[in-house]
Length: 72
Image 1 (cartoon, rainbow, N blue to C red):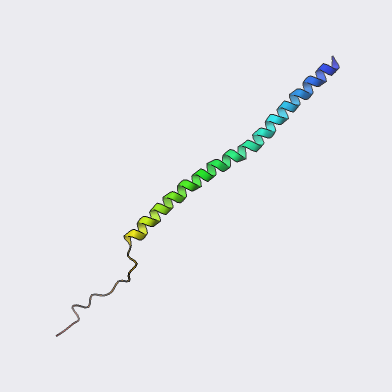
Image 2: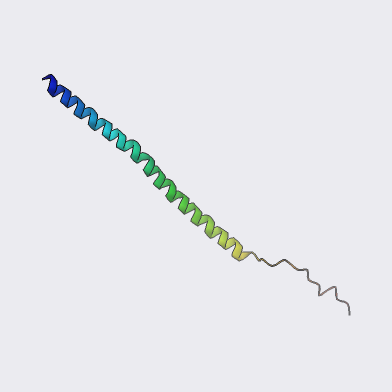
């Protein structure tokens, strides 16, 4: 009877410890996946915004209109 109780207790504790170990290893991996996905989405949005900004702005320096200053 005592051996059967010990066997049951060890089996139960072994299962619980194994389950707990799996959970403690899985949670950070799931969190890393969620974080990586969120970062990818944000980088895509910032990248599109940057491309739109640089396409709309000119890289050429503004030159003053000197056509009025010419007196002939």
